[in-house]
Every structure is written in structure tokens, then in C-alpha cells.
Image (tube, rainbow, N blue to C red; front, side, top):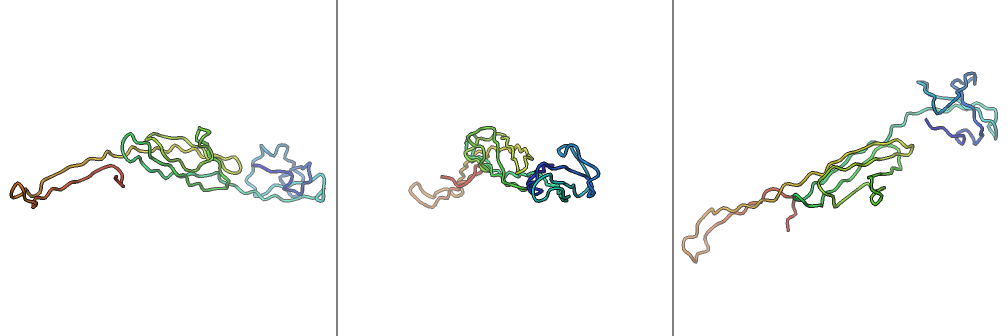
Length: 171
């Protein structure tokens, strides 16, 4: 729960109460918990001095991240990618554990390993993700003769070449 004096007309100091009659003072608003939908504040200074102001409480969920992952094109290639999509209250910050890539929601040129990223929302809540870039399947090529040429100089033979694995486009 984060409440600030400017939420009650910049009337600091603010005294917090759990009831509208300002009878039950909250000694530490940062350690207060309630199932009620509101708390009440009395501003000590400014235009609202002495007035009780209701502060509706709203549970704000932290960020929820989802990773869209592109596997590497082949084993041992460093061309994988991770793109993060985050729901919740932003702006969001991203901590990949490496200052060179912090605050990026997308990484490219990645090796096939597991990564760690912490997404932090507006109010400091975090979602920790551990996306893994999978290793792409190796490209295999096979060739089969479907029709043998009728004579050594004829062009009536047929060969079939098949590709499997890897990730197109192939060059």
C-alpha cells in the first residue's frame, strides 16, 4: 500500500484512520492491512486541513510478463530472440542482469540457453521470468534417385532433394 500526502490536497502532515469518524487512527500506514475498501485521511495543513478525506483502496496487481521466443536457426547459432509482452500498470523496467540490455523488452542474437529477466511495474511490483531459447533442429539434406537416366548423356533422370530441420529461410 503506497499512499502519499499529495493524495489529500498536499496537506502534510497527514493522519490516517480506518473509519470515517476519525476515531481509529492507523499508526503505521505502510504496515496496515484491511479488507475494507477505503481508509480515511485528515490533512494537517493546506486547504483540506482538518477535513476527513476518504481514500478508496484498489488492489493493483503487479506486472505479468509473457515471453515470445524464437529458437535458433540451427544448433550452435546465436540468432534466437525473446520478446516480452507485459500486462499491468507501467511504465515497466526490465532487468536482464546485464546493464547493456536493461530496459529492453526484446533481445535478439541470443544463444540457445535460459535467460533471466525481472520486469518491474509502476509501483515496484515484480514478475521474474526465465525464458529459454531452444536450440533449432539441425538442417539435414537427403537426395534420392527417382528415375535413372536412360543413357549416359540423357536428361530424363529425376533426383529428389529433401530438407528437414533448421529454420527457414535458407540461403
